[in-house]
Length: 158
Image 1 (cartoon, helix red, strand yellow):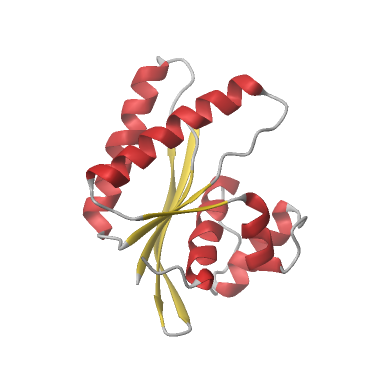
Image 2 (image 1 turned 180 degrees about the vertical axis):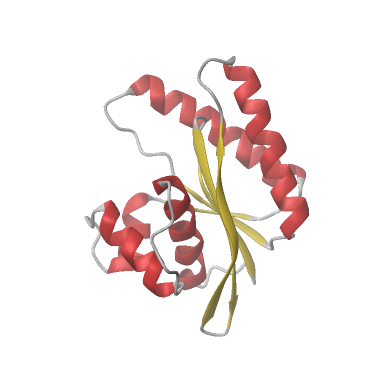
């Protein structure tokens, strides 16, 4: 099964494509879509839309796994991330791609066994589980890999 993992964002949107065959996880590719704050929000959302559709077309995933929006102290940021997340979900719908959603605690538990694990711990587990030489940067990319791994471990195969 090929999984497209997404850590949604408007400034930085992490993405990762992994495959699971039996118990074996293989990384196909990963990266981060970045948009500049100085351009209009609608243009930034358009960039995210185009890039996610391009990734879906290029890698032909069987499912999209996306992180649930976490509401921190900054409501303005949360709304912008929510808009980007909506655009990403639209891409999945336009591509007839099933979606599974995971909250941050589910992701931390799946990778570390502890729901309050810190980002460095999650990143280290991504590195170990996928046999990478280093923790992917930026954090958004490692988070996207973590979301994809969580789906692989969840057995929620669409």
